[in-house]
Length: 227
Image (spheres, rainbow, N blue to C red):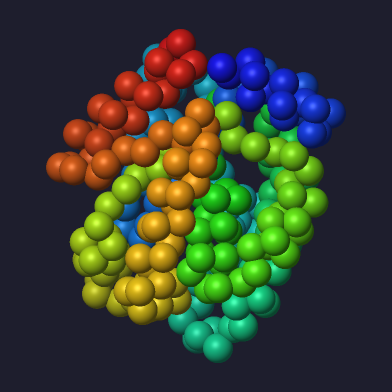
């Protein structure tokens, strides 16, 4: 099955044939613990002698991190949804060019905190932007780059927001501050993506502590890639 995914990537994007190691993305609603799971996976991989590289979106490059600072700043609450999306795509393009493409030539797994599924979930379902417009530009930006595996950490929205607030000292970030209905749309779209692409997206129910969730994470990753 993995070979089929790689062949499809190569048909859509000739340089994808250079990829010899997995590209794994981590997705989910606010407070789901995906970033923690990425760090745990990176640590475990290194402990068993497997090289890996971690990155994130928006961000991952010097330019991307400056864009991220704008997007996350609560002082920019008035940022228009389309402007928000275009900033995300600008950061993603730089990320693809400066980090993701080069990583495909390295002997290290690439782990990324959020990628294009976040854009479909947050900007299309959450913010209400036109799905066809978002999809068309995002495809141009990615040039066919598709994760080999996406780990979707599913959590009740109210619980996730409560976790995010505890993590951030009770202060809402710019995305967390959106109404709960938006976050419900985001979660629903994530689950729609998983149903649409079950070969790529693995849903992990967030129950218990981080180590308990990591047991599921490692089970899926190790089986998928024979680690």
